[in-house]
Amino acid sequence: MIRKNILAAAATLAALASAAPPLAAQDHEAAGKTAGALNRKEEEFVFLTEEEEAQAQLEQELAEAFSVFGAMFKAAPLTAAEEARLPLANEIAGHVMPEGSFGTAMDEIMNPMVDMMLGDPENSPRLRLAEISGVAAEDLEVLTEADAQEALDIFDPQFAARTKRTSEAFTGLVGKLMVAIEPSYREGLARAFARRFEEAEMRELLTFFATPLGAKFAAQSFLVQYDPQIMGFMEALGPAAAKLVPEMTDEIAAIETELGGARDFSQLSAAERRRAARLIGKSERELDALVPDVATEDEGEDPVI
Image 1 (cartoon, helix red, strand yellow):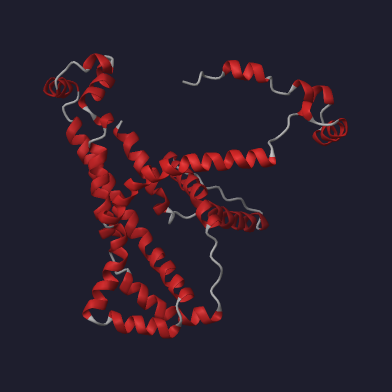
Image 2 (image 1 turned 30 degrees about the vertical axis):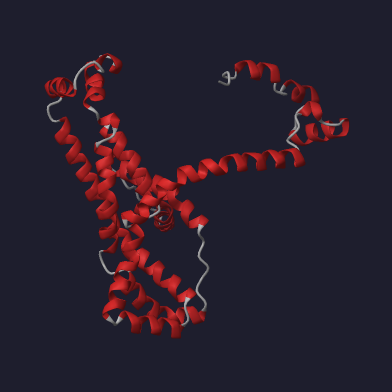
């Protein structure tokens, strides 16, 4: 139960752990070494322990899972002019994101997240008691909070302490992730500044950052993005989305009406049937047999309430 909560939160933040080296590069290096060994008529074998194999598998899975970010946000190389502005951009990035900024930002948003995890209904004494004792959770609803906690203390006296310690450990892990990725983030920030600002503009910014107000603005400009005053705005997404869903539904329905939907094999013309069968490599009879039975599908659907 605690593990499930931690893994769920970790999945949200796991993109921050993209510093794990992709095994593809390691495999490429290993392949080169193996080729060299074969040229010398030798073979090299690397034996890994179970723990090392598990770690290697984890690194590979994470690298593959989060490589989507690299594919999604492909950054074009900087031009020669932008490269020339990079030293100034690095100065600006250092002002805007001083060392430790990520850790400070995460402190402001992680504490509420941990509190929410600790207060999750799935961490309630009744559900934990049901899990351990085998008694149905609904049968334990009649217990008072005090009785449920006392009973749980008999089965699992360290439940509350373990939940708290585990959450604190997770928070510490996230902090380490922040430390690990911060240099890469700052480097990306500098490259973005080099692309979006001219040299004269960056020099003017650095002059401003040299003033007391400018220094404060620079140091707070990154952190303010994670201020609870801003993060809390997400609550407004629900009502806003609820108002837009009907509009989106109508728009999609209009598009489908205008452009039509896909046809099944039985709705194709004779020429289209022959061509489709030839392309797919199935007979027309086989493709006819694969046409979904609409009546059967409807019978299998849950009734709409």
